[in-house]
Image (cartoon, rainbow, N blue to C red; front, top):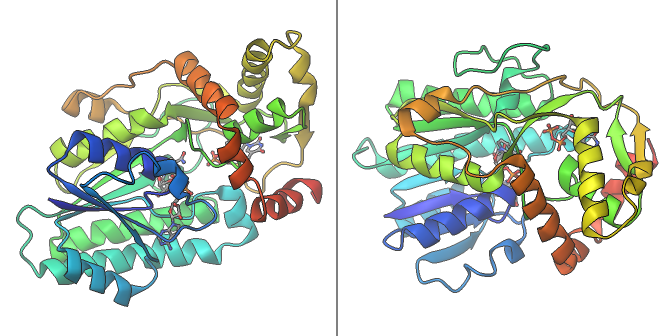
Length: 349
Ligand code: NAD
Ligand code: TYD
């Protein structure tokens, strides 16, 4: 099978590419990525030389380019992860989110529809999305696949729009699609603009750890490899036309999470216990900050037998170890544009 994975140089995409290249030597995995600030081929340096892997540099907003690669490589399935993914960036500049997440997704749907020309046997378009499309929860309840969409940030609105387009192409044109909506991921190769890698990076370097508002917002964290495993299960065994929610059953208040990270890093670096907590700095809240996300994954668990394979304790320790050992990776991704972004986001707040 010729399988197109978009956004494979990013955080989750790189883990999905590795899993598919290694587990399915009879598939040829094509990784299409524009290499934006979030895309980094270093994430896949161990996969680069594999005979069943090809990298294609390109932008999903360019329809003619997509048509050309579909013609050249005869893809039979697509796993679509390419996106602008950071809420704070979407607040500062929403148009890139509309371009990539909405227009880019529609371009891909059209490329599939044209290339497959109604012969959908053995074909699949799998769209990877987020739980943020469901909006914000109060203290009780979980997002299920039936929760009405209520996106509140430019990022989640653009992802919600893309989900709607994917379902529309299924209902209108019969395109075989599957969708999954996942909670917050963490793990190696996570770009240090997101909470967990940013906090690890700053704690390690003795820099202030910015916590928005009072740190009371709640997120449901899932280890990235468990998300990749869920994508594998849904891709192969999920039902066409269906959506599966993916979550960690692992809710954390931001402040508690950051305190835990401080303590784990103090222990690993032999610092005085509790000393890094002094770095926690409350900063201006995010505009429209969603209070709580939490996922009900029972459909995925019951139908496909998926469940998270690592506990949060294990996953977080593995993640901290990876960041402490990956000085060069961090050095590279935090130079240049990252520094400009960081100054604008935090120092000019
Ligand atoms: P990421 O920002 O780390 O990576 C996105 C990748 O897409 C990058 O490699 C980037 O270069 C590429 N890309 C961006 N615009 C592109 C374009 N126009 N054309 C081609 N490539 C482009 O994102 P991530 O955290 O790995 O998220 C991957 C997907 O999973 C996204 O669709 C996101 O909405 C979804 N998701 C993420 C999370 C999370 O916690 N990170 C949770 C649920 C769902
Ligand atoms: P983030 O990792 O950006 O993911 P998302 O907004 O998609 O959930 O943020 C996770 C939570 O952490 C969210 O409630 C915002 C908060 N946050 C901070 O308190 N400080 C920070 O520096 C960042 C980046 C996020």
